[in-house]
Each structure stands twice: as structure tokens, then as C-alpha cells.
Image (cartoon, rainbow, N blue to C red; front, side, top):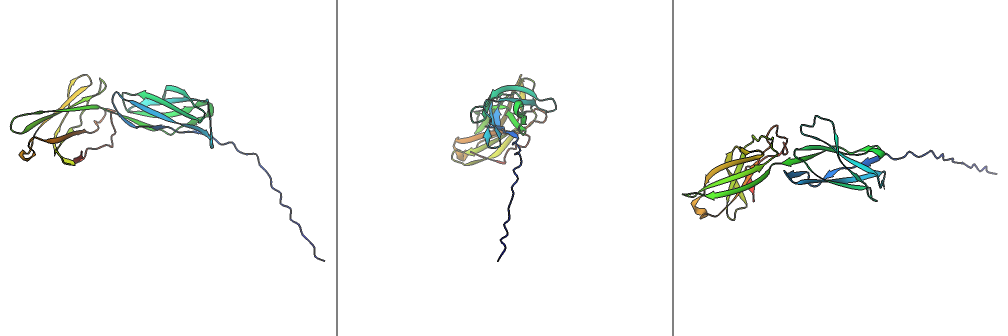
Length: 218
């Protein structure tokens, strides 16, 4: 006679640990021109479950990001845990979303505000061309970085850099950079042009990592 040995497995069910709430924050787009608004949004979740009807604060601090975060606006999450803000900023901002009731804070994101550009040109004698770039900024900003100017033939896909000029202040929050260049005679007065400016140190406007190319893609 064989002994039948039965093994009894006992599974202990431990109390589950509640998932911590998490909140996301994204900008679309992260870079805008002065005077335009940033659109920010995200979702508040507890594990896979959305947290609805919860207050979310948009908090920020302006360049140079050494002050305390301030609450800029509040919103309430919808049934999917989603929220959204639309805000205009005068300077680059460091932003975070906070859900106080859920104890959740988003990772930091950077909102970039660039000077608002406008370019024009004037034909001069002997195939010469004057290109002017105007830049609008908050009233108390100084711009120091040079503007780069590019020229290309009418059907060209790229244009080479033909001049650089430092923006000159012409009023509160208004700058002008001017370059005079010569058009090749073979272009018969038909051309494309572009301008590009880099970050001015200490301005708090634009992305410090952005650069201007040697050739511009039209």
C-alpha cells in the first residue's frame, strides 16, 4: 500500500498597497514667440485609474528660475483625469503641475518665449539689397546676439549666410538689425531671404541651446 502524500499550499493574501498618484505636464508647443500663448496640459492618475474632479495648480517661476514657485492658474480634471491651461508669458518659465489633494507634483518643464521677429527688404541701386529684421520683446529686455541673414536664388532649397548685424534698440521692447548685401547678377533680381537670431545672454528669451545654421533651408 502506497502512502499518498498530499501537499497543501496556503496562499497568504497581504493587504494591497495603494498606487501613488502621478501627474504629467506637457507643452504644445514648448517654444512660442513673444505675445503668443503656451498650451499646457496633462493627466492625473492613480495607477491606471484617472482621478476626476481634482484641482490642479499650474505653478511657475520666471527666468532666472531662482525664486519660489507661484501658482499661476488652477483647473479641474475631467472624467479622464485630464486638465489644460493656456497662458502667456513674458519670459522663459520653469513650470510644474501640482495636485494638492492627491499629493502629486509633475516633473519640471521649460517654456521658452522667443522675441517676435518680422523681416522686410528694400532694393537699392547696383543689385544691392537692404534686409531689415525687427524684433519685439518685453520693455526691459536688452538683446546682444547678432542676427544672421541668408540669401538664395529664387528656386534654391538652401541659402548661404551673407551678413551678420547686431540688433539696435529703437524703442521700448523694439529692436532692429540691418544688413546691406549684393545680389548676384545671374539671379536677375529674384531671390529668397531669411534671418535667424541666437539667444542673448541674460535676456531670458529663447532657448540658450538653439543655434543658427551656416546654410538656411527654405
